[in-house]
Length: 320
Image (cartoon, rainbow, N blue to C red):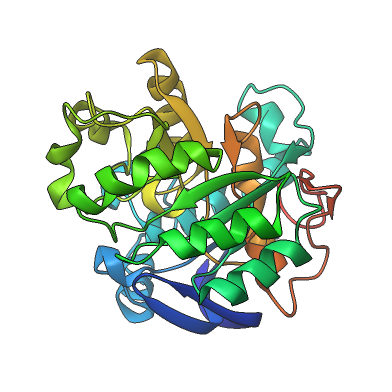
């Protein structure tokens, strides 16, 4: 049996990016029960990709009851619906076999990884205060994406002088704004910039100086995306809600590395259940951004452990 339910997690604080603000995370939880064993997974439908809670629920409910991961790849396109079902099937297989998912996938036992902590878009003084509050964290990811971001950059660096900083513009800059900001990214010690231009306009990156490595997020969904990234990006951000699950995420990681890209592993704002499969993809990644549960006021039972700026792999009670 395949069931899907909508769950809402209240955020600890308002979370803002260049496309808008939110106060809660709305997710879908999929449970698949066979022979008395239940596996589960979570997805976050994303309007940027034409998804809604209703549309993704309909995709999942339209699947045949006995579907397996191989058939799922052809039954659904990359996206949130396939992600939740794929991860639930992995969890189900592991529980039925009495093994961990990493064993079934032929991976080494996962360990903790340093994760980014995200500061949402706000006025400079608010971002400075947020940076100072989190200056003990090894990596801060700051949400930008407006024509007036220089004061925000300066403020965050002043608030967290020792933290590594990565910037996510969420497609919010033009080529001209990015070119103007690039030297200042270097001056302020920014380590990487994520999706500076809209995916539809990223041809403008070809031939531009990239003094700071540039990571594809909205421009990279699955392995098919890689052929469109050459000459534009240095890294790819792998998110399970974009790839359509752990299966394709692992394949994309392998293909991206083979083509010379660095790998970042990111997330939508979701619970520990959504992050758990991604911890397997995140092993030894250049950047890990799996802080979704840290932004929540309340998480799932048996949540992931976060300590010393690191995210730890899930215990069997959660997933996998």
